[in-house]
Image (cartoon, rainbow, N blue to C red; front, side, top):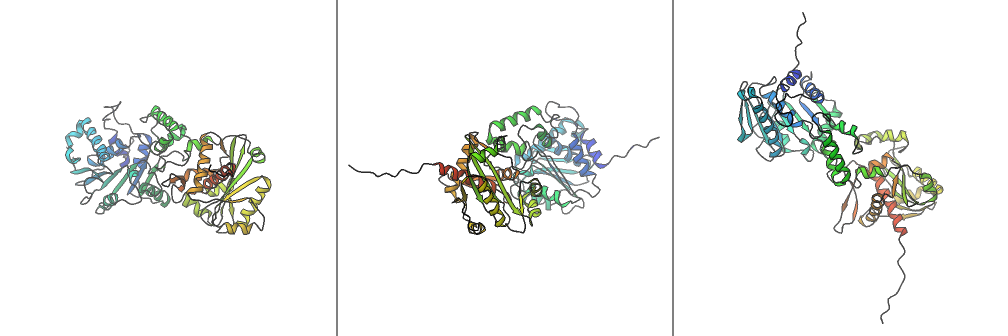
Length: 505
């Protein structure tokens, strides 16, 4: 006779939640059926031999996040993980967000009569009392009741991705309130934060790099540079797609993002679970990708009008030399990029960029030492000037004296180009005009792609614009050099002002 298998804690939690009935929607009244990714998360959290202290589940919107939170808190209230005389909390940044969890849990209780007999509901304070073990649950918000005086054994923070910056007093108050418990648990369930230095991003990055056995971190996100209509990318961020996450709805939202560049960032953050800066990028990802087309770059640079932009660096940034060629009415762009070899691995981690891979693929040239060797840069640029008829090279004055020494007296068509609003605006407008009029092509170099995606523009009072990094560690040298090249090209193409006199008669 076979002995029945003893269920693990995680399996008990899953079984408890799947005994509940769906409280709303098309399947109301049916038993909850957890998706595979939800079960995997629960098992990893509750069956962790090291005892989980912090858990993170980051996932796109409409993948059953709120229902999972409600199911978990009920499991702690009257289910298999209830602790005698304990307190549990769900936290959120706003009252509305906090109410969502409480209201759904309340609906679950109303939908399941057995729960109604053992749980006391106090709507006015968003409180539930699990009578068998005297467990108290409260939903609180950063803009509402204080977190002081609490001592929860469990905290579930809903949409911690809404916290801006790396520190938050409300979150810290909740976390420190668990100090009296031997085995506290903090669960964070949220879509990604927009920035790398926001709290959720910091928590995720630490979890993924530290290897802390008491931290469970599951992140479902689409590849950063994916096409908006890539359904495989949708699935990466939406594991419930085709189940309780509507495929038709995803398709409709993606089409909207394609039609409306202003909506793209929102779609990528909420529906593809990507870290996307709330400030729109200089060029939307989709528009930039359209410019990568098969074309004869060799003919363009050998036969067309060629211009270049040179953005020098010393240690941490990239040195970029980007050329543009105007041929048959189309602008073609390709570039050369250099970086110090000694700090390559370190900066790859800091910048979150695969520099070492790009070196192997030939997209990025490493230079010996911890700083840029301008002799090698100068040698390569001289070669390119001999190969192509480069009419002008726009440069910024920073360290240009060092670069000129490396030329050893060789004359190049250098044209001074400032990085302030006046000159930058010319290049930005010229590049925009070419891109949005389908008159621009690039070769898909991932270094330039990175720079484009990291860049945004800021404006002065006169609406002149210049580039700014979207994040502190993001490199934008390639797009700066590209805009310089387009700017000097457009300025040289302008007719000289007429030399005339005005006579009064």
